[in-house]
Length: 120
Image (cartoon, rainbow, N blue to C red; front, side, top):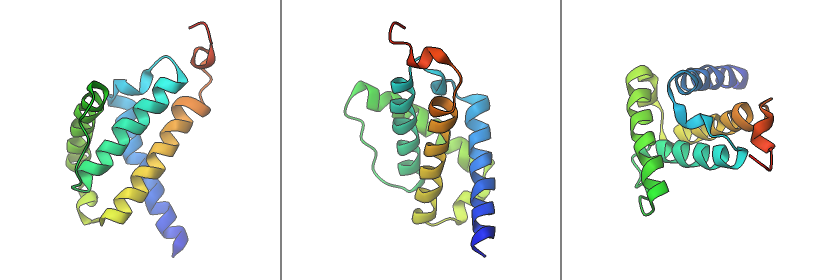
């Protein structure tokens, strides 16, 4: 049963990842630290929106991340009707795994040497 849940989580995460990779330009910052901040900011706020929690909008960067998160949450709801059947804990687990995976794809596993170039 646990393997089925893992497979289900991976399948759902793949659907969310696919949308981000094909439609979201915020994932393409030129430095690794920018990507880390962006992934954290947008995906955390998306999780908060999906869970009906308050979202901090105190700084200009908070507002930028919030705007991207609103669009992302709307698209996730539209494209992934199964989200409505998940409880908050499941959504948080899914979004946390998605953020970790996006960090791997866009930062840690990336072959783009410009991400770590100190002179860039």
